[in-house]
Image (cartoon, rainbow over all chains, first blue to last red; front, top):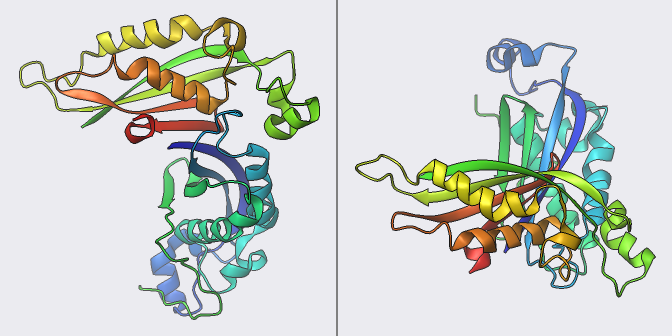
Length: 158
Length: 139
């Protein structure tokens, strides 16, 4: 098996704030990330695909299809947006980069078969950098269920 | 323990399959298929797995590792047109995956000692694309 990883970039703003917590608790837990008007980051998203190299083409998947998937399902809705206001999942979920990673991984997994009907390759992981000093990685395997259930109340363990 | 050593080389290549049409090649490889070729600054990361020697404290002599990377990869590929000058890319399309696999093939037997073995290579074609080849992949 070989793994190819493609890097994408997007900038977005967010505010870490939970309606389930008091103002004081939000301040204590999220600190400056709770400032009322939000703030932004230049995110770096790595998407990894694992599979066999095709003997003729030397490719695992067509990179243009991977670009189309990531562009349409993630970048188009995230780039130059306010994550809290503009991305459906974050009306209830706090857009920490942990949760941004979970949402992106779920979206890419769910839409994968539509973009790669010809391929047995699979999405094997994503990694997202919020800044150069922190990054969040999810290993994706078929045995792990999707993680975000929309319209279900979200409990924040403070 | 894992130790990783980096090496760089710059090379040109073109990704196309002769039996396919211009449009089919473009659909597969995009801009990489333009007939005259283009180049990249490749960055190779080679990761060994092993235990430090009880006397020297080294998994492998890094000077020796550097020399092997230089001899097997950098010297034959640096400032070359891979399709024309570096076999098997006269017959095999030099996608990042195939170049990574060829580098693995060249290194695996050379980087195998009593206390260490080649665990992984990562080949960056540029800052936004890389391929990993690991032990089980090339078995």
